[in-house]
Image (cartoon, rainbow, N blue to C red; front, side):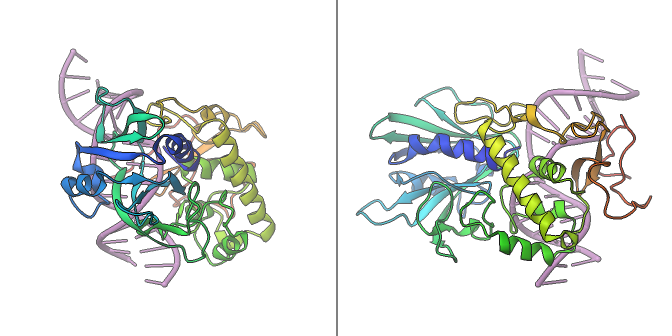
Length: 327
DNA sequence: GGAATAACCTGGATGC
DNA sequence: TGCATCCAGGTTATTC
């Protein structure tokens, strides 16, 4: 499930291969991969072919490749925007290589130093997408994202907040946002308009590290607790980045098709029934807005007594997960 | 306007 | 062995 570390690993892999490369041709095999694009596959191919890629940039879980105009030395005005969804992959392949399983789009490039190569967008569950979108100015005048020094960002990424590793991320603004939210802190961490790059895995891990119960109302957190949480979010993301991201299955790999190792370092996520690394009591799993939360009920005390009617009560150990759509 | 929820989608795992 | 069902979860449209 690509979150910030996984997407950054992909961005870092793409950057040296595609920066300065010219698009020779584009093949759209499945137009469902263009749900964010304003036109059809032919439009996507026509608008991309012949363009020069300026860089590989990222904000939160969104990637983009800024495109230079076909003539002159002007700055990039639009970009190929990509989101990996749950199972998207960006792979670097030799030109003419065999089609990947679930390949949706192939972009053939020629790089002045590396020669010809292909960027393959493959996506099993088709939650990911590619689009060509205009670049607009950032409201704060700061660079649009990682790997992109210009103060611009694709229009469809403009509503996405900066991530906690971004030098322009404002801790004070984050604290103010939380102080005005009644929602559970985990829900707020997953809200990409508040803070980007965090998904279910790193939300659970950060809350476990900060000893905060996921159902705690955001506004109930003290300044000290918010600062501790931000510190743990950054620590978890940095560590995952250093280990190449989290791979549970073949759905997350870097541009060379290799898996990351952070799954071995998880303390709470996916460890239902296993002892908490801190206190030894079992990690519990509860249903949470169509997904799961994993936490230690001892280290992460509930903000209030859980009522029997609450959907989020811990399951007995070894119990089967609740159906997502109970009758 | 803020918050909560459902829908989208595929393939591996599991149960019968 | 084959079929049906569950499950994973990021984003967004819809509903409350």
